[in-house]
Image (tube, rainbow, N blue to C red; front, top):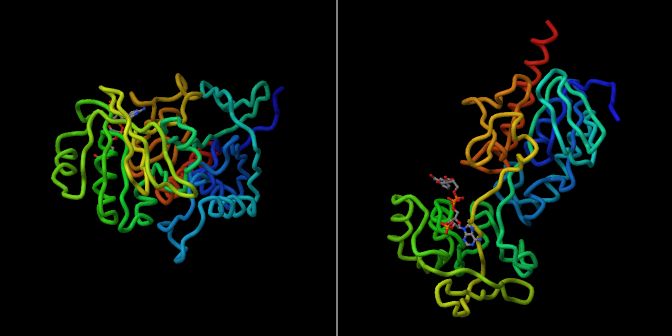
Length: 311
Ligand code: NDP
């Protein structure tokens, strides 16, 4: 089925980037159509207290913040559909986006599908998410003042998160599954030199233990398979992120790791009229506030694009 109406702006994704783009586009009277996807709200839906989003001196719960930004977008006329885009066609104007067999047409598209932090996939990891298990030290480190934590992973993110965690925690273990760290030498050295950090090589986590909150983990030696208990109050996963770009492959330029390539200081993608904002194009900052900032940029740039098309 095809909708004959051609929207000015279609926004795909509903984290801080997508909702902020919607606030700006709707206030510009463009009546954006936003597909919030099946997991509306993005990564903040899996966090508890957010203390670094400006405007909330006492902090705010991640899901509450997303609900509020979503409401703000609706207030100015954003049409929100709880549907997942399954296919796109950016080869011709107007662009087409599909929900299974239903086609929607748009003069401009803003992509804000985000990135998903990778998890090990353990049942217990899921159970303690937000109760000691986190995938974002920048967001949650402050909750672990004078506590003992562990970081899973051996890349630059793991090193950076571990060093950041030492500002609060008394002890930070890094569990690296292999013999060698993947992190760059400079980042690894910074972690190794830090007295609060202890690197455990050839180790992985097989279970998170606790009653209401995390109290320890089961660690397994990847060489001998020997298991042991490590007492920690928190677990930080730093095993990488996966950008949600599967449906954009062969439609716009992605980098070798799947992130959308945008022009410097811009949200423009390789297709004129298609913009990308938030974590789907950000391998560096990955914060709710930076995602919201680029969401604003995408809305302003799409508005300019539509204006230039009209003249
Ligand atoms: P990486 O892909 O570089 O590293 C992932 C790490 O997680 C590796 O040590 C990997 O182990 C480990 N890992 C993956 N899966 C599992 C698993 N199932 N169990 C246990 N361990 C696992 O991701 P990062 O997020 O660290 O970095 C992404 C990119 O961002 C990199 O290019 C990095 O350089 C960059 N970055 C730069 C920073 C900076 O310059 N300030 C800061 C943070 C990131 P293994 O090596 O065995 O595969």
